[in-house]
Length: 130
Image (tube, rainbow, N blue to C red; front, side, top):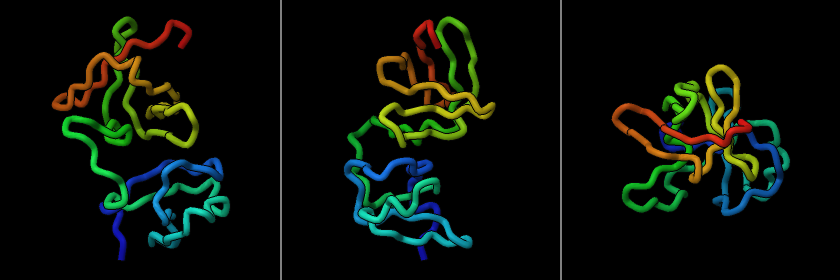
């Protein structure tokens, strides 16, 4: 039986075409993780999708995935503390940090000034319009 520790969340599935998906995507049904073939992903729109961590290629030493930022506090260099990341939505072309208060902010490498893993702090410089 597959456990949640063996899986990585893709977030809520919102489109039928995702690049580089493994053969199977899992969704939680009645407390169990049920596999579906990736080509049948259109049946799963609106549900949270998961993939096996073992199906994800290993990252280079020192790199993080967006999902690893869940729980980090975001601090803007000009406006200060913004909030805590509750989830990361990678279902669209723009990766979004979903904050505990429901706000969404774009996550982009160009905005990141520092990632402090010990303090769980993400320092950013957000564009003025945000």
